[in-house]
Length: 439
Image 1 (cartoon, one colour):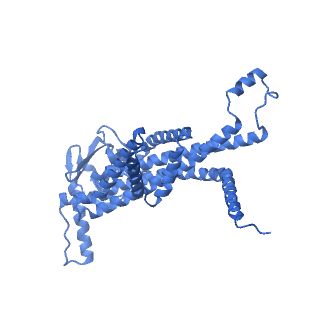
Image 2 (cartoon, rainbow, N blue to C red; image 1 turned 30 degrees about the vertical axis):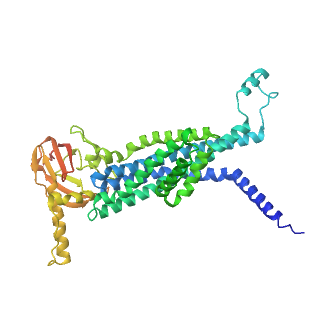
Image 3 (cartoon, one colour; image 1 turned 90 degrees about the vertical axis):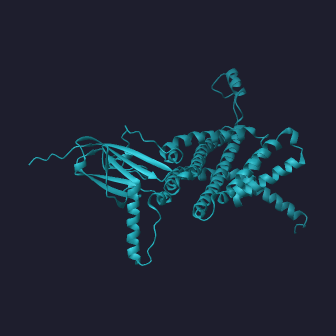
């Protein structure tokens, strides 16, 4: 006997609801597995932030360091929040599994079988929640953490990609288009964000919650701003944020707990930032002339992946020469025209001759804006181009002969002058002990 056409859609709907309910009940298995993988994966992302920071230091002009700082710091914050959320999620989900297992053996508290007195047991049980309530609340919290974490990941991933591409295009077109024109998209986005914040404040005032004009414009601004800032993911991300916002009154405690996770992520990011070069992007370090920084000496800093300072072989020199390496960053080419003038190609030269001439021009240029003094005496160091053996950074290397050294304490000062924008100075103290080999 076949079902009537009217009853078929009803059965299909019931079937879908039953499938969705079963999926909800069994989602903890996938959550636990993905959470464990996510914890491992997000910890690896700290290395990605360090890599991105070093790239921005190398590529961005000094005047744009602040924008690089905003991208990598927000990335560090997002990853720190993710790590906090996934770790807490894993712990809570494991606790939830324990509660479910305990509930299957002991469905409820028992007064009669208690090892304690009846009076004491009843008083204790009066302040404890029911097992089913705890299991449900922990399950809800785990699911909320999981969705929040991946929403943060998607928002940051898109915004960091968008800003990085924007900065790349900006620097490529800066020589051909006025900077104020290139900044128009940034001004528009900033204006939209400010307007959205203003309308969000006004629109949520009791006085304007029923005002059609205010609420309509708030909707239009949120939609437009979300399309710009979230890109093609804006519907999916708005869906998650609206689930939270529309259920705020019913589940305030869950929303407050998510805010607590944000605070824990902020705390973790403030700890992890000390292990990166992110502070250099906003406050380049002023090196104390009386301190012997480990980065100055290659034998004391053998695993340094990115150098910000010049480097000699050791703080105690016993050989015939001092080997000095100075990193040359890619962004320094933006300031070389001021010091060295613009390189002009010679059409009469062959390709090989042109390459040789170009290399010599830039090597001479490096010598012009790097100054080296030893114990107060200006040295004329003949530099050569070289990639650092450990960090693989491009730079220049020079050698200082022993005849310029004095026995005992020596002070080497390296100055890098980037046009009229910035001057960096490093004071490298070392001790010279001549080899005394008796015959």
